[in-house]
Length: 256
Image 1 (cartoon, one colour):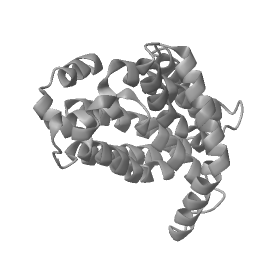
Image 2 (cartoon, one colour):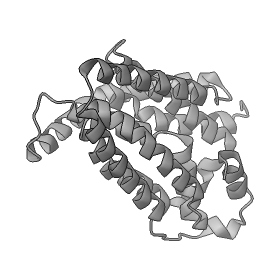
Image 3 (cartoon, one colour):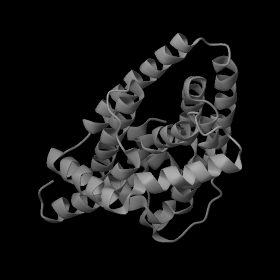
Image 4 (cartoon, helix red, strand yellow):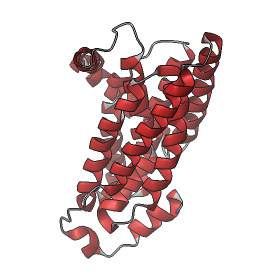
């Protein structure tokens, strides 16, 4: 099922389908998390046999692919002003809350408990993979669709894609990619559990701005992978919330 057809299905769903709270087991999130682990294990096995130059080439290839995905997402915006305001507002809040520092500190504590060498790329692999897997239309639409209708086709398709991406990421970044399965399950599972009350996010004027703002964050991930500049990714995340708020505001003012 395509993303557009999934949105159309949700938009056409009877009001009663989203009118009450329905609790569904996040099977899609479970499958996706398992796919990430499997792909990561395969990637780590492959990565051990690769030379440093080859691993660097994989970094560059991943970076280019991620930037291109982000550009495609950013172009979904129906009003670039919303996208710009959202990402700027988000980064201000993120900097004030020091989200990047807090996330890195939490990752470091988790890393030490696992007795992983502090000089490794473990934390970078965890954060990078989590953001790639969780910021995108398939995550949002697929998880909410499963929560509202019980259909997980889109998430299962995403699981296959994430398995392939995990192989490449883990070959370059190591075991941290495998542990991204934990936040993937939590985030996607939460969207599924709350799917029956999050249907409003499927309105095109909200969804497009959410995807577009997420696209800017995905582009930042690609820039980091390419080594062009170190961007504090976590500090950009509040922009997703502002994208929803500004889309609602602009819609109320009949500007979109």
